[in-house]
Image (cartoon, rainbow, N blue to C red; front, side, top):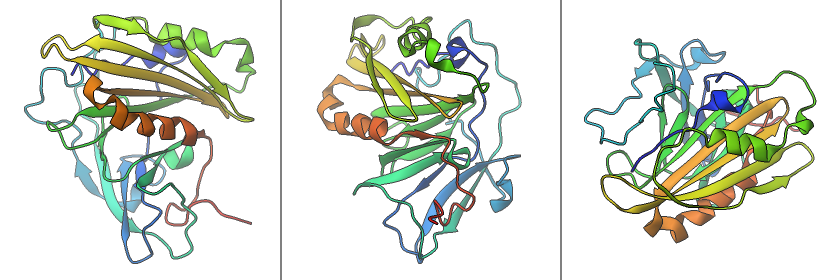
Length: 259
C-alpha cells in the first residue's frame, strides 16, 4: 500500500521529532513489564541503552515514500532506545479492554491503540502497525509539533486539513467531508480518502486527523485496505476518542498522579 505521509510543515510549523513513545497495557500488574521505547537524547533516555534501528530491510515498494517537495533527511539514521519497565502496583494507566495506552514525549500526545500492535520509530513520526512488516495490513502514524502560546482559534481546523492534503499524489477515488469535534481543551478535525494502490490495484482508505490543544498540534494518519474497513473502524473511533495533548507524566511506571 502507498503509505504516503502528509507534510507536517504544511500545517504551520516545522516538525518536532516525537520523543519517548511508549505503549502501556493498563491490565498489566506490577509483576508484568510494560514496553517503553525511548529516543537518544530525550529527557528520559537514561531509562535504557538498547539501540534499535527503525528501518525495515527489504521493505516493499510503498514503504515510507516521500513527497518530492519534502527535504532530504539527514544521512545519519536516528538512534532509538528500548527498555521494558515494571509498572507499579498502584499505577493509574487505564484503557478499554484490548487496548494499550500510547504516550509520546512523556504525555505531549497520548491515545489508545490495539494491544499488541507493533511500534516502529521513523524519521519524522511514530508508525504503528497491526502486524510486523511485511505482513501488516494497516498503519497508524503519529507526529506532533509545539505551537507558540497564541490564540489559534482564528485558524480553522478545516484549513489545516486542506493544507495537509496538499502534495498527496495518490490516485484519489473519493474524499469525505471534513469531520470536526471539540472538547474543552482540544479541537479535532479529520477527513477520509479512498484511493487505489498503484501496484496492487486494490482499493484502500487513508484517514488524516489533526488535533490541537495545549499549544500542541498532532497529526494522525491511518491507512488500511478497503476490505478491512469494518474491522478497523472501531480502532479509528477509539484513537479519536482517546487522543489527548499536553497531559504529562513524571513517572511512566505510575501514570498520572492523583492528588
